[in-house]
Length: 355
Image (cartoon, rainbow, N blue to C red):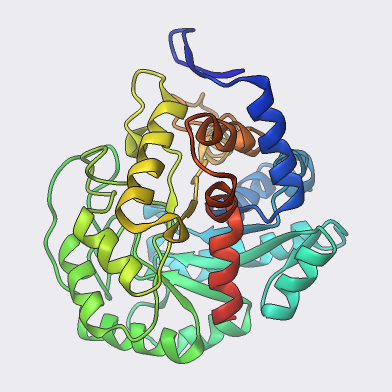
């Protein structure tokens, strides 16, 4: 089996024995995707008249991959920034309503919820903010978000806001400067007080360096790769990877073509190269999956606006293909223990400590 490239060629050809081995690992051990724009997609599809989004679009693929935890981001599009707070709340409410009554799904707010999801083989969904544009400089709104079930945030997306400056978009290649603001520093302290996790994906290099100096708790990069493997400012440098690992953090491998660098259709190959290099530099205990699969989101957005999607951005067709990546890692010589850590064990351990 293999992942098909854009020109019909085959990427890594994974032998059936490794696929079977990976599927067994995925059914017997925790699996985590640390980044999915799920809340926003649900709202978009609701606006188009669709409902039961998780059940119809995601649950079968989650089950095939054995997923136990998904981090659903709340991402406010540029066009909604003038009503960012309202849009963020609509996304959170849409997600909660969509999974209400789904016995296979559990919203994760604390360690007991996480343990229940694992023990009962449910799909846990944890809400976090991809950028805190919605709070402006009103740090007190973090308390409100926490009460709504939000358990983490990145300070910014790939743009500047009242708290921090993001790096360039994944499709660009330019350095962007700008430090954390006073409000941003205050937000970091408040998040640590609330035990909300801090995500550094999308933060620019200057902000990353400053964050390392002020944070007192471990932070994570939910969906970033290695800049050494693919030179993109959305990826982490060796020094950033080492700083993240030294503070007990984890980096989730992003499955976007622009970030993996798999422009020739060699998706599994590039994902493996990133992960293998990260393991070499900082150890398997600091690496995970955070695929940021956004094609479905983009299709929903396109359908709502009455246009066809321009292109596909994802290295994997859906979550059901995640075991294929695990199989490729096994075939290339990675140990079962390391693969188990990467596909979910590391993030589960991290969240058990902070929730």
